[in-house]
Image (tube, rainbow, N blue to C red; front, side, top):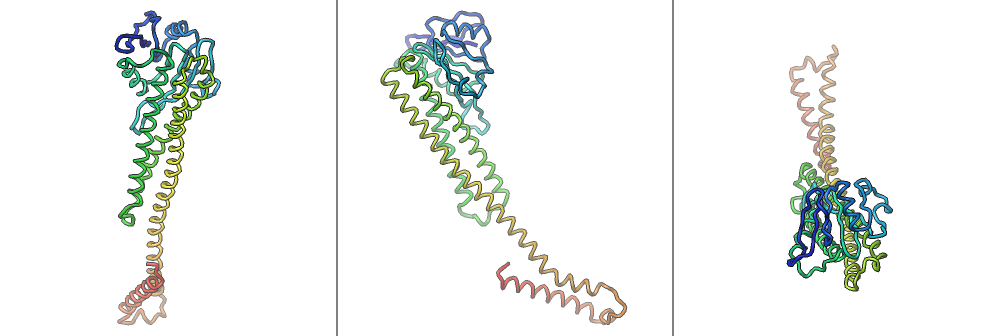
Length: 324
């Protein structure tokens, strides 16, 4: 499917083209969603550059993700499909950019492009050129990445309070299991934003080497530098949050281990406490003929008393040693 954005009085007009319909020559942004070969060729003809296939977009080699064509610069970056959800996934989106137009090639529905679509349709101040639209999209991505990191940081603070806050000695393994699950969810979110930031940094650095070819203005060059600084800042915040998550995970696992050790200790002490009466019962259970206590009228009560005294003495010994 091809969605073309052409200049209009209110901003850019969104035109969803029917299969086989020609691309408007005035298109400033061409959004290719799961394009067919014919749609790719139509975009290539207008841009003067080859559009990468789905297999090429999925490739992880830098040479396949960042390269220059005779008519445009081609960049592939990671973008979140949705935000503030645990199961959000990332999708590779390719940008084919020259001084006049921007082509986006995607096989998913990133939220960022939906926001950008609404923005360009109602913003009359936006310059109607490819680089301006690309920078508007970068602004949206950076804001969303920052929001995601802030959300993850807030979730971490709440979780840390749950783990180390009041009632620490009353918590059970089940609550720690929930904490570990939440830690994993926060870690996945941070890792995804880290991937997005890394791919954007590479794209910005590559784009900076073709500034003259793309016709960047002095203001756009400054914007490019600012975006780079913002993304670096978000990435550093994510790295710091990763370290905090690792510490909290180690601490939570340590608390679980302490609880398990305490349970093992209780069973060990109970086993030792009941060892003397077990020994007494074993002695009187041997049933030898020459055992005078077997015919003693008070023998049963005597053996029970010995067992009780042995339990009490063992218990007092462990209390004295502060093992209970």
